[in-house]
Amino acid sequence: MEKPILAAMLSCSSTELNDSEKHLFSRYNPIGVTLFGRNIRDKNQLKKLISSIKEVIGRDDVLIAVDQEGGRVRRLVEPEFRSYLSQKNLGSLDEQDAVNASRCHAALISRDLKELGINWNYAPVLDIAFPNTTAALLSRCFGSDEKKTALLGQTIVEEYIRNGICPCIKHIPGHGRASVDPHLHLPVLNYSLKDLEKDFYPFQQLKDSPAGMTAHIVIPEVDPEFPVTQS
Image (cartoon, rainbow, N blue to C red; front, side, top):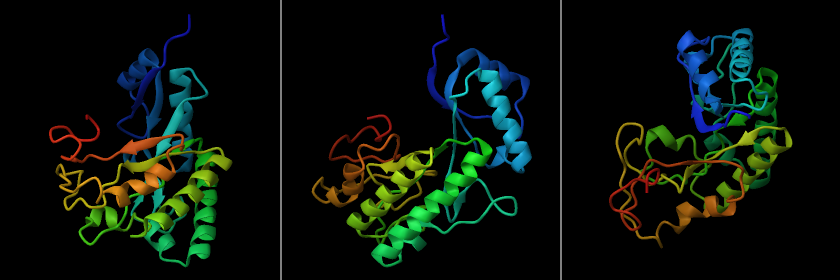
């Protein structure tokens, strides 16, 4: 009987697996592993780490994920890897230029990821930029136009899929209105659902994307007690 796959994305502590992590991965057979900056030194080391992860888990279809949005959020950094524009830069272009640039952006990042053995990228960001959007998020948004955000998001999703990379839209259902960094505090969005339709729009348009990441926010209009990730 085949070992059941654990529906969880695990991680590791350094640039190679230690004995405890090898035991954990082997025993629980996770669906995938997320890589962070602490796991990456250079291309050769990263390829060896990914190969080791797959070997220990015992499957070739392990999801190997990374945050490689471009701009300030990227795990593959210079000088070993190419630098890419932020989504804010892409979204600042005229619409057709923005579409073309976004398609090229996703295609080039896909090439980098495939070379390493990474098959899942936590991108694109579909949050809408507002006057009170936190610095942690602002440069990662395409802009304040929800329709343009949906268009560019769809362009990137389709290009990743075309290149064999699983995209992950984020942060459902949108935390552009959050005035505090959700990595540090729990934002509460005291807005009506009518107001939030603008925030929801890109996620509704891309609802058939293969993966999504939720936002760590509370929307009292829906659930005053639990954040989206637990509601």
